[in-house]
Image (cartoon, rainbow, N blue to C red; front, side, top):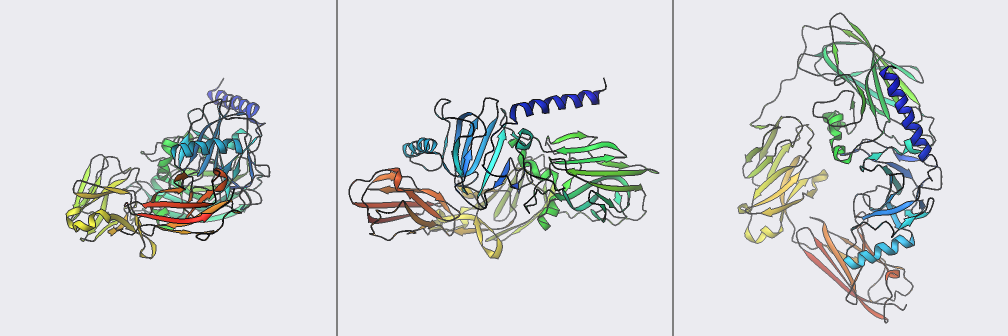
Length: 561
């Protein structure tokens, strides 16, 4: 039997097995599923690892366990997934529910006991198998907007035993989708110094003519040497306007399979390499992503199910090529782009001259640059490829022009403490200029004789000073007020320079759980947590910023239980 048929039958068997095990999954929400984000979607520094399910801009919707199992992990952070629940199922799958408002009563009680024991809001727990069993279809939580969410929704994932995210649509999670993917722009690239496209050595945008609702025809390409194609495209589902990520991209050359990218599974370890598959300079300039339909030599991703060479096309003299790119979603809606390519060599092609500087970053070596009084250090393989860095400095400012190259690791910036007055050194930090000349704290520390900061960002860096403690003020109550009828006690807090690092609250000297919402700048205490004794109570809240400046707020309130 031919290898192609064996491969096909193998995949059919796997898909049938998956369907038999998972087509009866309970849906995570008791409503039609509308998506604001799809699996494998391109994000700023990672692939999206699940489905973002709309909740009609509401919080508090019941969230259901998609299958029987047990809670094996609970994680609460101010960023990321916020309040997140992880359930392990007998099939070996793990279901993940993120940005939750709260858990069901049983799980909520378990979590709060641990938070009070450890006296911290942000926590990661791994319950024993017998502690928190769940039934299929049981309400395990309520949807919310916690963590790094930009609006109320449920983030839902499935993972395998290797903790690799899986496409939930392959496991029975369905959404209504009769919409074809949308092609926004098509590009062709000369990929080396000897290649050319339409008498150019630069990226060329191709015009598209719509043949029907499923097929586009591109202008003829006159090319020589090694070329590659790139697309700017997205997918849509019924009843929503979100521009979501593509499921599958397939390219054929003269009818033969040449390149296929499919979003079915990836590893978190490789997700950070997302910038290897896009035209990074284009993204920096326009904040839109062109996906490359070829694989760079430094691209370690395993999202390619079919690949001839690296996916690039070597144009040979006297030959014509018919290139076809097919975009499809998981429901089988398809869009095709046909591109005629003809071999043609222009004698004169304008090429850009490479600009060289004294700061050459060799990707295989440690590179240390003294840009007095600053120092900039790139460890080996901080970048994917070597490049020239443009940089200059004064005593107060370090300017590093973006080299238009993606980084896979952070580089180090150092500034000598000897340049700072001794009395100011405890308050000094490295900051990056943002929009409207606002500065942002760059995560760092002081060691030996310098301030140090690690970053993947480029731009203008300065030394800033933070000697001002965070502010704290009541949000939903007044000092010395009677709070008997209150369910929550809420305060506003924030820090206008380095940002908040830690916080703690106490009532009558006993630690209380304050939930921190960094987006709203609030600290919230639930009076249901503990019964208060007596009528008069003292509240104390302590907030510390990243430079160690501490603010303490005290007040008296009254409450009868």
